[in-house]
Image (cartoon, rainbow, N blue to C red):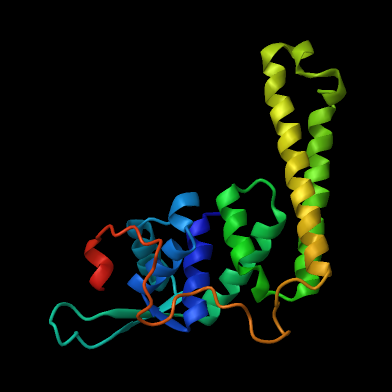
Length: 213
């Protein structure tokens, strides 16, 4: 799974309808260009591709009074919504995915119900434990990495990574079960997008040919 599909679908869904530069602006506001491949070219390419795939509906708007090409607004379709929630659920449980995919999923987890998110994260913990057990079949952390030469440091890193991620996940589960955040069906969600005309303090300022589209 690529994080960019989840990020773009989620960003469009938050707005209802959004043009490409709005999506780009949101993702830069979240810092996604730092922790994922959400660069301008990738965002605009994903919008166009998912429109071709029927996941987004492209609306061509009237040209601006200042001239230039018509601006395109995107709206998520029924198929796009199904794909969005499939990617979101998969990202929350699958420990084989990169940190960018998990980061995107955490950013959108409140679109699911609280109980479901807890269940998905518990499944993630189960998979982490199973993966750690498979590593420790060949490597005993208590003995230290030296017994396997410097190659042992690889397994040592894997075990520490699994332990750290599991500790973080358990903490997140505890916070969610303790009532943190507003999930689907619980009321008005936290708004993590910029208002109309609001300046983005994290914008890269990098221009792209599709910014005006």
